[in-house]
Length: 99
Image 1: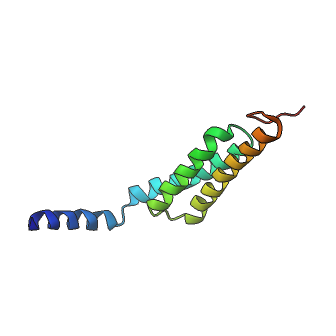
Image 2: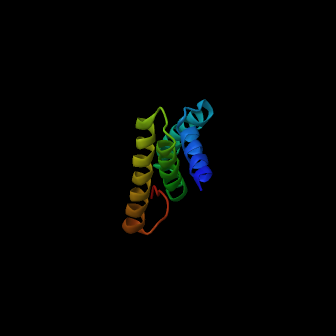
Image 3: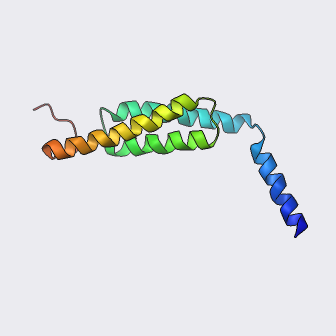
């Protein structure tokens, strides 16, 4: 039983250590979520909005060095979903319409 607790502590300590590959992945997630959130304001709100929220949240959970960008990804993703809801309730469409 003591060995098991020690191995869990070792895994927990290893996960807390700084890992450049994991940080790079988290930074990429933050930037990708931000870009998808921006693009989602114009096209494909239903897909890009929730994707931006998920990527931004994962980036924050993985301790990105760009937490502001990750928070913007979450905010823009939520704005995409709100915009989609407004479009659907206003004119019953799932996309932008110029007419």
